[in-house]
Image 1 (cartoon, rainbow, N blue to C red):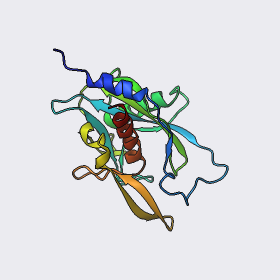
Image 2: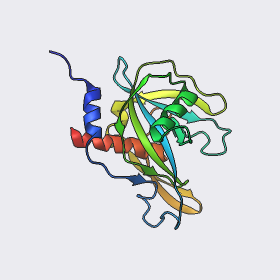
Image 3: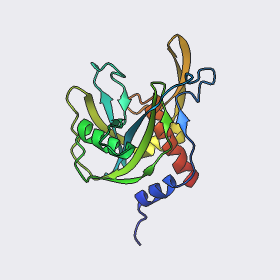
Image 4: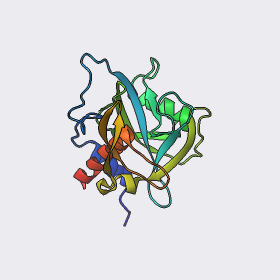
Length: 201
C-alpha cells in the first residue's frame, strides 16, 4: 500500500478557511497608526522533504543589518515591480538569500496575509522545495538552516512572551528550536500554518 503524500495533505489544508493576522493581535491596546499605507511583501515557507521528515527553511539575518539584525526570518522581502506579486517576491528573495535554484519550488498554496508593525502586509507562500545546498547571502544572511516541520506545526510548541518595545510592553509568539529563538512575525506566520494543519487533521 502506498503511503499518503504529506504534501497533498498540506495543499488540502491550505485550501481551508483562515483569518488574516497581525503583530497587533496580542496587544489590543497597541493598534496600527491611522492612515497607514501598507507595503506588500512575500515570504517563502519552504518545505523540504528529508529522511527524518519535512524541514522548513529559515534564515538568521546578519548582525550588521539596519533592520531586524540577528533575527530568525523566513526568506522573503518587499514586492518589487518585476515580481508580479508576493509569490514572485518570495521566490526571488529566496534565490538571493538562500540560493534557491530556479524551478526547485512548487507552490502548494498561500496563507492569509500578516500585517507587521513595520508597515508591511506579508503574504506567506507555502511551497514544496526540492533538496538543495543552502547558501547564505553574504552581508545579508548570517546563516541559512532548517527546522523540523513537526516542531513548528505543533501548536503546543508555541509560547506567548513579552518584551518592552518603544517604551511599552508588547506580547508576541515564540517557537524556540535548539539555539534558534524564532519569534515575532515569523513565529506568527508559522503558527498560522500550525493552526491550519490542526484544523484539517
